[in-house]
Amino acid sequence: MLLLYLPMSSTYTLSDDCGLTASFTPFGATWLSAKFHDRELLLGHANVAAYATERSFLGCMVGRYANRIAGSRYVLDGQEVKLPPNEGPNLLHGGSPGYHLRDWTLLYADNRELRLKLHSPDGDQGFPGALDVELSYRITGPGEVRLSWTARCSKPCPVNLTNHSYFNLDGTEERIDAHRVRLEALRVLPVDWAGLPKGEPEPVNGTRFDLREWSPVLGPDGAGYDHCFIGSGAQVRSGDGRVQLDIGTSLPGLQYYTGRHLTGSRGRTGRNFPAFAGFAIEPQYWPDSPNHPGWPSAVVRPGEVQAHHILYRFSTPAA
Image (cartoon, rainbow, N blue to C red; front, side):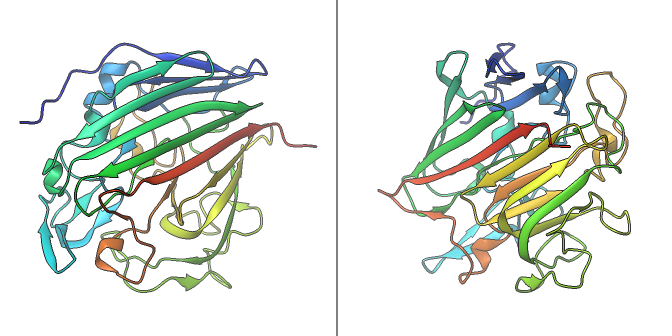
């Protein structure tokens, strides 16, 4: 029987001594706060307990499979695996209970690094195999937070972990219309109304998805994004131009989401966020990849180690 725990109140703060402080909690392996020269850049809730009831996945690690699996099923090695759906007929962020609702185990903490682990038993969320994850948040340079993890599984299983932090580089809980974005991606996955891929990756040339040069964060039409871009790097600047976030990763895709549905969640002030109050860039394997054998494979087999990282770098852009 899988046990869920009430959120721990413990928090751990890392610092680079150059203006960045970042706070975390083992509940959901959640990134709670990122202050850069006293500006809060991360959307968050008023206290750790709120992370157990709010549903926007602020700052947390999601899995066993981030994003969506169509029809809550896939076939691997000739065997069909059926999963309990949690978003209509589909599976979102690994199902229930998600890894964002688990108390991860503390391995080590000081003012530069936090290490956590999670054991997900065989059959958890309907997935085969016992999964063991070790994760580290670490200060690696001025303004830099490196998130890295390893995953091992006792049976063949797709494993797609990511962090679901939302950023507002203006340091507010208001809309991010004035932010600018640049994504190093030549292709994007087209999606249907349910957010599921409806074909192979398409070139961004000549479309609203061409974000290779500095562009409005919500796109030229202001409609926003919730799409997987085929690339490994992104840059975003605050509306006032005083803060830049660079993101790099070892993963093959960047799910770029501009927070259209944040309206049901409350921020630190106790007020509900408006739509488009923050953006999430979630490095990950492509959505529904277990049902697309030709796409980058997230499958971890016994004896293998899946290892990935995400690097977040905060800076003050040159004038």
